[in-house]
Each structure stands twice: as structure tokens, then as C-alpha cells.
Length: 204
Image (cartoon, rainbow, N blue to C red; front, side, top):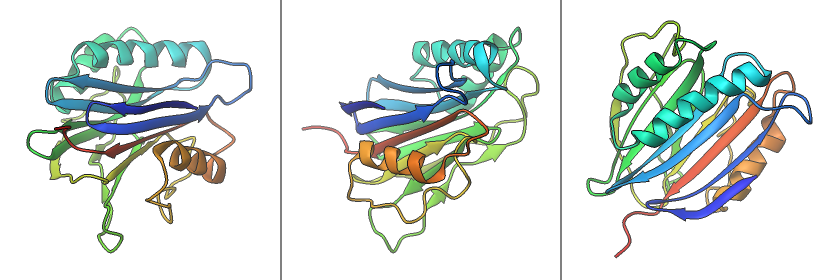
């Protein structure tokens, strides 16, 4: 578990495990603040072990360095940087605190869900395109949506079973939500990662 109570506009936490205890995971997260916003991402290096972890690290370094850029451009940068690796799939969400909006996009099967603070409101899903960053990058499709304080972003790699965001206690801390998703929905045949970020809005 990695928890950072506040990073710029979000309260966030990460929970994850490698496929085999004592080995390196190919799943990594990025939470990078920039002027007026924050980038949240989940990366899944293809396969398992050191080569997958290396691909994920290369992508994470690119995202940290260029966090203020829009997701589609970041995916293109990652694609260029990952050409010499086995590649990765990833989903990115860029939150703009000035506009109260989030722009997100993904390539591959890293799921992204936004859970609204209003329990009657339907959740929203990140726009994903099939492909592999570093090997086969499709035309990226961004989507921009509004966010309000207490909305919750959940990103999960394919080591978490589909539909894990249903039935969560939205009043719980980011750390508790991440741990609950990992405990209840882990797929034991893969590395697993859950990134949870609750939007808290700009601080006065």
C-alpha cells in the first residue's frame, strides 16, 4: 500500500501485488502534480517480471516529466519511448482544478471509472482503445468530463477483475477503497494494481 493523504487536488492511495511474492511487479502508478492540475495514471507493462517492470518504469518517467500535457500527447510520448521495450498498456486522467474537469484516455485494458459523490448518478468509464503503447498505438480518443469535490477516480490493471468498482463505500478513505478492491477482486494470475484518487478541489 502506498498512501499520500493529499497531492495537489486529490487524496490518493495505491494498492498492488506482483504475480509472485518477492518478484518485481510490471504494474506502476503515476500521480504527478502540475500547475493547476494533477495527472493520475496506471501502467501495465506487458507480461510479468523484470522486462515488464522496465517498460512500466520507462512510461512512468515520461509521464512524470511531462505531466502537464494532455493524455493523448502523453500516450504518444510513451509510445516513442517504449519502442525498444516489450510495451505497455495504460490509462491516464488529467484533472484541471481551475475548470473542475478531467480529461482521460487509455490504450489497452487498464480500466478507469469515475464514481460520482451522488450515489444515484451513474459511474463513467474511461475511453479505451485497443493497442499496445510502444508497439501498436491507435488514434487516441480523449474525453473531458466535469468533476466535483468527493468524486472518486478508480484505475485498475487487468490483475483486478472487471467490474471491481461496483458496491464500494464512497465515504471511505482512498486507502480503504484501494485495499478493498484489491482484496475482493484480485485476479491471482497476474500482477495487480489499484489507484484511487478522490478529487478534493483547489485549496483556498
